[in-house]
Each structure stands twice: as structure tokens, then as C-alpha cells.
Image (cartoon, rainbow, N blue to C red; front, side, top):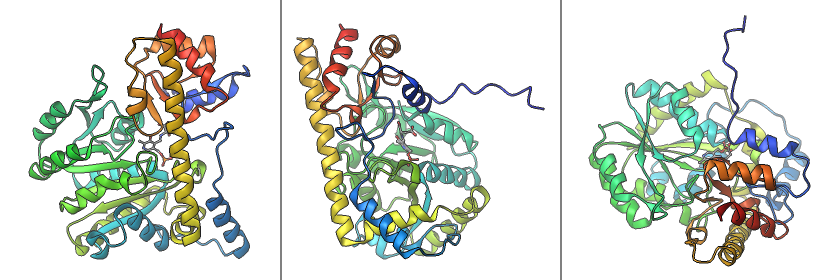
Length: 397
Ligand code: KET
């Protein structure tokens, strides 16, 4: 029956993370997957999440199906987090928000919605982008192209080329944008660049689709929501999938959301209805435990304060690892331009290492990163940064 199937080559990120787990070498270092590890190399369970879960356990409430769109308290908390409680778009009810199965679930529901209601629309992603973007949108039946983004020569954004490509897209094209902490490069648009891009998106009648997976890891929880707020201020309709996997360190709980900012409340109701239909046909409703975590951590003042402090501490730890890595590499590779390790934001740095250098790092040194040369800085800690930096310097020489 299944002889005709093509073997699955595996996922370049998840597969590597699994290979790392199986590696018996004691000094191995995991810089592959976008997961935040603490200074002891563990995935932290944040105190705010622990307390939210303790409350839920103590209440020991029933576990009905949630509505297709998820828990109301979680959905409104997401809108307030993304846009600010007083934002006109939130107050006027012109945002349709779903609680989804991680932001991946949100991205895919949005992609299915676009395939159904914008037939013929094509999707444009940054070059490069998170590998799974292309897979998800193509999986929804959409054609995917890329726009220029990263400039290996300068380590910055090819902003003029990006703008030129986007200005030439047909109306209704979907433009996928990383709201902050670009994956895999760590190179973001500046606020001025967003302000220059937004009129182009509007004039061309394009459909922006933001991915906000690392809120709080860039410059701060509010600062990292600059892009969705600026787009909403400009009155453009757009999609935004956001994740709590990283910001609340709840990867396997699948905490995420999809919001569609519309022109008015009537339009948002229409959109929400079709999003509900998309969910019903896919997985029917999202997880209730995830809803409880999101609603309680964001909605309870005490838990919220704990969360904000933890996000700041995680961001600071990554920045300190950037500085340590940079200092060791700069000492070992004098004359090399390495400033990008300091200027890039979020979990990732795009090192410029070739696939062959990446293979050498894994095979000879037990240092794991994906073959594009992306490293997850959050996998570094005070116990392994020296070793990892020495290995990276050795293959860079
Ligand atoms: N968007 C981006 C940009 C992203 O990097 C990830 C995860 C996701 C969405 C999915 O997050 P979710 O947990 O579904 O809310 N990225 C890391 C893990 C992975 O590949 O799944 C990574 O790039 O390593």
C-alpha cells in the first residue's frame, strides 16, 4: 500500500536537535534549535508558568472543548499584548484573534484561509527565512517566492532591493515579515525602515503577514511589537502569528495565536467566522492547558510582572553570551570583522560559516548548528562558551 512513498529526509532543525540528543560526547554543545536554555543548559520552567499551572491544578476544573477560536480571556490578552490595551484597533473590535496550536498552528490556519479566500495570491518571504515558512505556505497550496533581505557583504539588510521588489508585487500578494529577531539572521528592519516599508505595502495593496516568535528577546516586550502597532496605526489589514513558546519557555504546550487586523468590527467578525471554519476542519479547537497558561500569565498582575522580569533576564543573558562569544573570537581571530555578533538581535546569529565548516564543527568538536551557519546564541552558557568559541575559531581560521 505504501511502497510508492518517498522517504522523508527529516527536518533540518528538528532532525539536528534529535541527532544532538543521541551524541554521546560529554562536551557537546547544542546551538541548533531556537530554544532558550539557561546558564545551566536547561530549558527553564518560568515561575509565572509554574504558578499558573499550580492554580489550574488546585482549581481542578472540568476540561471541556474550547471554542474553535480558543479561550476568550487568552485571545483578548493576546490582543492587548500585541497592540496595547488602549489601541484603537483593540477597542474598536477590528481584530480577529484565534488561540492556536503554537504560532505554527496559527501560521498554517492563516495560510489555509488565504488559499481559500485569496485564490491566486502568491507569498513572498525574506531571503533567507525560517525554513518552515516556505513548507507551510506551499503545504497550503500557495506559491512561494523570496524578496531580497540579508546582505552577507555588509551584515545588514538589502533594504533598497527589498523595497524595490516589494513595490513591484501584484496587489493582494502576501508579504511575510519577521516582526523582530529575524530568523535565521538576527538582522531586523530599523523603525525608519518599517516606516518606509509601510506606505509601499499600503500603496500596492499588499497583504502583510507578520511572524512574531521572539517577542521580548529583541529590545523588550513592547518595543518588539513596534511593527504590528505601526501597521495597525497605518490602517492596513494584515495577519500576525505570535508565539509564547520562547517568551514563556513553554515549547511543548503549544501556546500561540493568530490575529487578523481588519478595517472594522463587522469585517473582523466575518474573518473570525472563516478562521473558525478553517480550525474546525483542521484540529477543531486548541488546547485548554495552553489557554490557561496564556490567560493567567498575561492577565494576572503578579504573574505578569514575574514574566516581564524573566523575559528581560533571558534577553540579557543572551546579550551577555553575544559579548563573551565576540570577545573570545576577536582575541583568536585578530583583524576579522565580527561586530555582527553584537549587533544582531534575538536568539540567532548568522555566522557566515559554510556547510562544510558546520559539518566540521559537529563532527570534530561536537558543536551543533544548522547548515545555513545559523547559531542559537541561547545554547551558549558560562560553562560552554569558551569551548564553542574555540571550535568556531578553529574552523574559521
Ligand atoms: N516562527 C519562527 C520565525 C520560528 O523561528 C519558529 C520556531 C516558529 C515560528 C514556530 O514556533 P511555535 O513553537 O510553533 O510557536 N523556530 C525554531 C524551532 C522550530 O524550527 O520549530 C527554530 O527555528 O529553531
